[in-house]
Image (cartoon, rainbow, N blue to C red):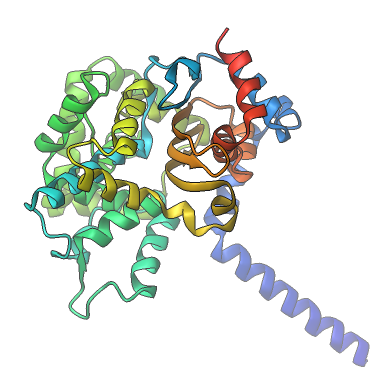
Length: 397
């Protein structure tokens, strides 16, 4: 009898525990179940790319989906330039321009980094169901470090910090409108020399594409948006502004995404990134080189950008191999992007790098993102001469 009671109690606790785990992670479980068929995509590359030499083979064999640029700024002629001028989806790599504009204004004295802004206004840009965990991490970072005042205010410098650290889309959209779309995209045009498309607000991009919200199919929505680029940019802007300023539209957006979630599969999300801004990777390396040389606007502005990008230096593995390392990474369905600058502890040489992966097979993307393979590749390109030479031999023929 005691055994039966114990078993009954054990089963009840187990059911309660498993049930609570499922409830707390139900969106993840549902997403995995709904996308199970796509997990086999690219499975043939999983075993091969536990070795970074295998990753180089993937890059070599898929030039249509990958760009790699890596060079010592004093010897660019010995660098790796692979598909450097092929336009790639930017994702949150575009946030570099928000950071640059912030540093420019602070260094010129037109913006006080201690200026307080309403954190509720920052959070208002968050779109339910889209990268909720990153947004929560941004909030937690601010709360845990007591960076939100009792009145709900936060320094603009800290908004920039969580945007860089957590890729928080709400912070990025807030800063996009705080600085002004015209000013930001003038900066993009000037620095990118027309090789980088104008930035767009993330909330507007997600609202504009979502087929369920617009009561149509993914294929029809994709085709309509891709055949009218001028109208697309206008619609993205209108939807983002309406989400902030039109309470009726905002309620409709919130009601839909809170009830339905993103309501698109991983393969459909991969299609969505076709409407995102794109740019030539080489344009980013030229900007990064100015930052590492201290010549982007001013040494003060460049140093400020370097400081914000240096968040990886809190890791012991980084400080063992680098005198300095700064990065912005992006990881979203089928996309793995990285911008980084670093000074090797061994060679003392300064490197700039851009690595863009896009349209990755879903299963392969999950393998790469869960093991941080692309980030490891970028870091080791700077301090591992053997990997660098293998990459150069295969990618610069």
